[in-house]
Image (tube, rainbow, N blue to C red; front, side, top):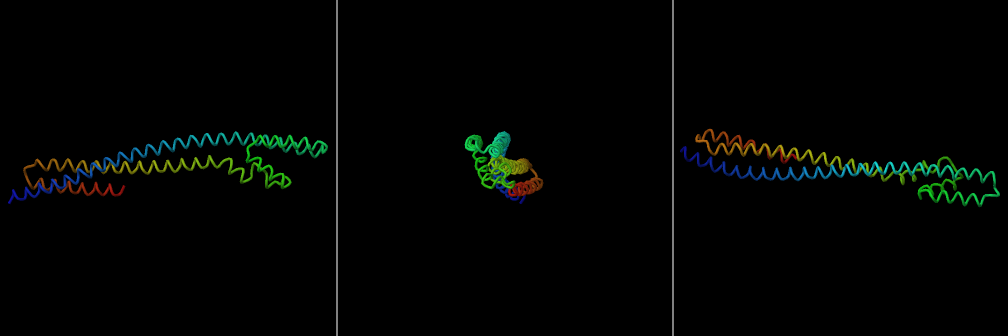
Length: 208
């Protein structure tokens, strides 16, 4: 009777050992893949952050240059009022100044001039100019934020799966000990403990 119980226990141990081994291998593999993905996402987030910083600095320099050219072009508008006989010459000079600025400022300037230089259509503060000037930096910042979130989420999953692999490895160790113990009662308790560890480990894997 004791030998029969021992044989049944050995069969259960072998079956459980196979399941635990497969689950441990899969968990370790998935943890490695997700850890690698987390590193990739993190690197992408850092690259996008650096590009965002570069875009913001570039936008600030362009804004400063456009502002100076806008001021100079508007100054010529005052001269046109004071010296109407020079209108054609000053308009030509004004156009040259605007044409050396960004295309966005040129479009905004034309709209401003057509409105009679109304305050609500001031080029630098117009919605179209701001979108054209700062949309790239804002897009890169948002993309960096999303990539960082992905890195954190995938990294957390990798840690969870790694923890599950540790639990499953403990189950493997317990099953190994159970296989060499003479007392079938003690071995049965160890197999039961390993089964519990297996269930817990699989639960952790599924939760990831």
